[in-house]
Image (cartoon, rainbow, N blue to C red; front, top):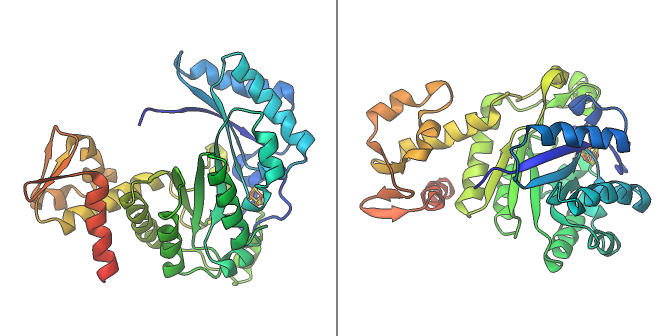
Length: 335
Ligand code: SF4
């Protein structure tokens, strides 16, 4: 997949009708105010300066319930982004939003713009988990949003979280399994970490919530990723996105700067252990060696070999990566 160039615009908590227990976008982004035109342009051109020329650049609005804003406010941001597209400075618009704010009325407005992708914050496919997280939606809203997006041929992605209050290992794994049944183009997964000044911080201090350990999160998220990628979907981001000093706003929880590498390392470890022999495309070699060479001893003792082809070979048959993961997933289901 060729690299995409994204200009992220954070509009903290704009359009949020409720504040989820795990969330504090001010702590996550360090941004306190909604950006005005000058700030939007300054951010846009700061990013564009570093992107190679003639690459497709997308403007992505994050940190808010984008379609939960008033139509006037939402269109203010859309008009600004569309102007960049009309001037050939950008290629498309993306945003994240909450499922209950995907409605026929909002889609009518969105049609006037070059919206290229919408990420819906589902987090879990279990109503008790959504309620305990103080999400502004229930499962019915999720299904309505998915139906509307699919009916209108709008590409969408799903955001899932693990370790939320009232969730369990099986609920999180089942959320991944349900995700495989959707037409979502991509998935992001992040384990719940406790951010400064979030409700979860209070719950943690009152001993009402215990976060997952990093090992638990790696074990679970790697299984979820195997399940989702076995279905041919791509997990495009693993772990919460925090930059610079915002990382200091993590009170406790399974945060790691290289969480995605830990997951890719664990999946490779599962493959090495499961397959008694396998030829692996060379492009996977660094994942197989693993983060800080974690798998190198295991790899040396294994019958894994690397080759210059794009496919895997197992027992003289060719396989795609998703086929290899399917064999692992069948094994999880048998356990
Ligand atoms: S997770 Fe999304 S909906 Fe919930 S408070 Fe944060 S920005 Fe708003």
